[in-house]
Length: 349
Image (cartoon, rainbow, N blue to C red; front, side, top):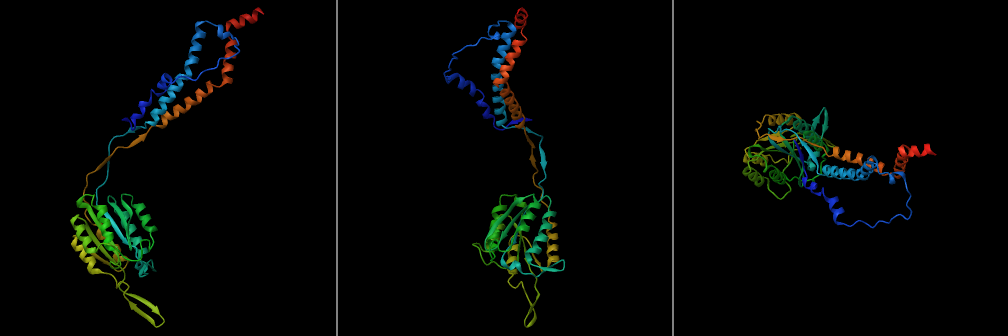
């Protein structure tokens, strides 16, 4: 159907008439010299009708231009039939650790050792592309936590923004509690049965205002289920001047806290020691049953303002052409050349 978004603008239609009616016109100076022409003394009905049309035509065009401009400004829209928008699935908030420990190069990707964040970007990006029908959001945290991408169906953009994230963007420490608190704020307005947080970290809570366990309790009250992922290799060979030795690069990982967070919110704790295990974890998360939500209905809208605006522009050009003095003189010359009285006078001469 056809509708107008700002119909109140149409109330300005009588504005030119009101200005002409109540504001006195500027005084006109009469010409000092009057030059007689044939059409000035021609009293035939045809000439009178032509003069009337010429006198009124510019005003009619100006009124049409004014009406068309107001119609365009009121933003006419063509509203189509309601179309269902697929919105079944979960609201998944992904929280990724960007602390300094994520630069540890203990992950093997295509035969090359890479840091932990590079491995997470690859696996999490593929996970996001598979979650069709889910709203995904992205929180990055270090010393502080911030929302990088709000809940959206645009998974490609989310993966692109994740790929642009760099270690240390949010500080060198780890604020797990703040990341959970920010997730609660973003998920609490969503349907209670579909709130899920997937939190990935490789360390322990060393910063932030909120303790992770307290944040988990608040999440449980909001029916937010948290899946925690502890990431990082447990064994790594390090070469030094004294030879090769084995170390545990994940010694700082607080698995007990991550398990407690998951249990408090009826979630699960996963441990990923390499990229393969991380991929298996996200495949497990893929098997989460989607919760049907009420379909959202949208009505496609097509703006039509360009049509009346285009016609107004063409009429403006036409009005400018008929008001050109040169063309007016040409019209008068043609009228005199083809009038019967003019021809008779020339024959008499």
